[in-house]
Image (tube, rainbow, N blue to C red; front, top):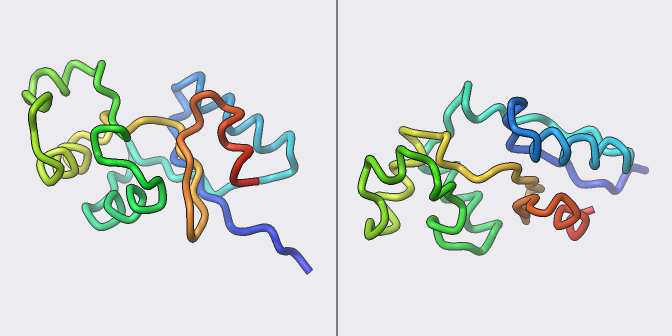
Length: 117
């Protein structure tokens, strides 16, 4: 009986950290479902669910160095605005993120994902 939870990797194949996370999981014998969030942007509900699993505020799930973050003046934005920004500009979502039905972890460093394995 397989007791391994289903894993979903929020993945950007152009990102070296995301590719490293996928390789790390595969080396551990895990083939996660890939969520190509740049091709299929998440809904507000999906982002809210992921934030709940991460137990983080929205800003901590964002790539604050992206130019769109500055262009959209998100530095002092409230949580609802940040979530909407990630829906409309998924490049703002930190990567990689590994999720299960009940928890999630940002894979920076890659070894941080081991807490879910």
